[in-house]
Image 1 (tube, rainbow, N blue to C red):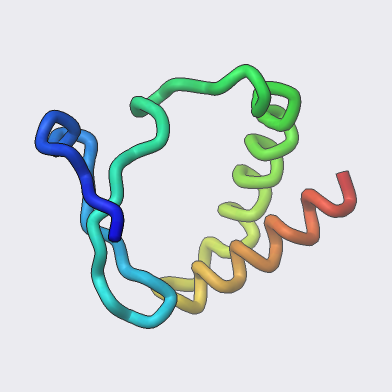
Image 2: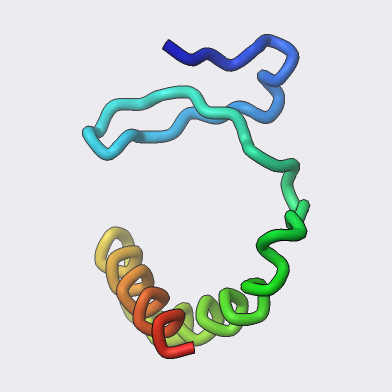
Length: 79
């Protein structure tokens, strides 16, 4: 079983698993940090996120989350 060291508790958070059970997870990178290997994808994700947020503006909750995920997937496949 994995654990979060006490020295990293400031970057840990409680998230829900796919089975609906909570677990503790630490952040991979500090907030705002952009790893080098992801920089080539940054522009495409920024554009897709902006476009999909506008396209799903009238929805809320899980309906919006699913619609935005579907939109992001389609937008990134096109690009």
